[in-house]
Length: 144
Length: 385
Image (tube, rainbow over the protein chains, first blue to last red):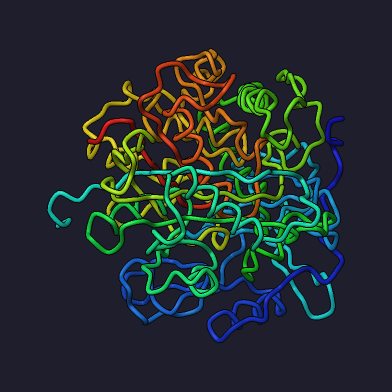
């Protein structure tokens, strides 16, 4: 048996596992619900940071501000999962690390591409999907 | 400084029966069996124990009535290093390291609970260990041209070791060819089912003791060097090959290199002195990565290195000779890590049966992997450093 090829990857349509956002992370998820991809930028050293933290991972300054990402970047690495972590997930789905143009990385899933079309270095853009009521996730799809 | 003249060594090891499911067993029953088994192997008794490391240390100190006792706090092969240090510093005389798991994973509609992160930036993406390690493997395939066939050679080699190990969960299931690996169903591209660790139940223990407490006829096994490289919490951040810390050392993809360098320097040994490599094998690619990270082959050449037969049980660098987490056992988070050290001890003692690597004096044991952002290293030998 080999995996099916050429299936087009779609977003989940269920209440996937998702922790209740905390004080630090709530702005990010609120941004997603408003179709905006947020990240932290250090006012002291300009380093971009993600996931949200209390202090800059580079210079340790606590003077961090939220910025809007353009939501564009390159696939840094990818996989296609055919055996889901839990039955909540529909397969196949494609976890990936995306390197954003603003200089940080995040985990996501790639959608809107065929499973056999995924490549390291492919240009992608964010696409917010409400997978279950109130839960908006920042997926990425091939850039237009 | 260590107390003058004190020296610690591994005195006993024990594996309980391992199985996909051990009906009627409990984690605690396996722990008790493993503790007593390892002590018996060491020629010691529970009355000799004044230190313990496990995932249930405090309750075990109470329930086994070991107090007052020293308790360790780390996991995997690092438990051995920590216990040796504790004994050589005079904090304890005889330390038992124990872990077991039974009946904690029965919902096989999902992957094992210890493989699934709960972090809010990871869990919604359906991440689990196979996907985490796939993201590392993909970078290596992209950058160095490592092939699917080379991954298959690793998986077939380790699964054949397990097939020949009567104590393995998958004893007698082989032989496996590289083709068999890719013929199994896809889990997380590039990993097929047979590239991945199994899940199982079982327990194990080691006894570390002041060498003055060990009957010399029982052949104490010495820790010659060790190292621990950690880049952050496992499964909470993107497992990026190029993640680096501020000191500008090797990236996460080479995690374990610094640990290995430290271990070899402490031991005064070179890579050529290693007779057997009991490498941690959560996924096939991880063996290729570790061979490079530990400098057994040049960067990017791990794929051709394994394809040339070096890692076979009869090769120059035999790896994971009990069948590892793919075939021997993968019970919970900790037993399967400690079992790399147990296999190293078995090889040095000459107790590895049909899978014995002749003339083994030095074993390198490892845990972790780049999908988990850490790698630990333990160098064992039959002569003190």
